[in-house]
Amino acid sequence: MVDLSKMNKWEVGKLFDLSVLPKNSNIDDIKNGCELAKKYNCAAFYAATNYWLPVMTEELAGTDVLPAVGLDFPFGGNTAYLKGVETEEAVKLGAKALDIVMNIGALRSKQYSAVEEELRVFKEAAQGNLTKCILEVNFLTDEEIATGAKMVAAAGIDYVKTSSGQFEGPSMEQFLIMKEAVKGTNCKLKVAGVKFPRPQNAYCFIMAGADLIGTRAAPAMIDALDQMREIGIIPPYKG
Image (cartoon, rainbow, N blue to C red):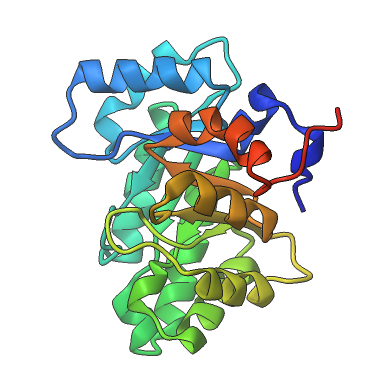
């Protein structure tokens, strides 16, 4: 569990993955995003396509901000083979963190062997780089959220993630179901698609157990840290 009372604004940056996800983003959008990710000490900077990875790896070189990409994004309907190919290409192009969308239709159809296979392929193709799997919880029942999260943990994926951020974000209840499902495993928790008011909700998810928040609004959320302390949503800084 993250202890926000011991984190200053620079350290809090590592609780956020900054993203620029629209497929129509241009090179200036990507470069500006990389600069913001460095300025705010984010954990990673994400695009939604492998195309921009060479630019990102160059812009982020010499920093500890990870070049990252969303794969099979945002619907997750590709075959395990195609997911593996996309993952392998991302690694070759410099990705150090990779988020894949689970095949939601397969999960909802109880085609669990297909989900297990795509997770196995993804993990292997990632070649030891940081892996995260998106459930897109707003499309799932509570039981499906729990089942999907358990499968992610069993596959050895580093993070289970609530959402892609392209649709309706998670409720606290949905997050807590996901959290309970991976309790006692090494799988960490990432939240995306945080609803308005974003800073308040983002910090509430962190206090509830989220290890990472993925968002295009990371700078505003980090800048809101002092205000969140002032109004009592998060504890005072104790150093």
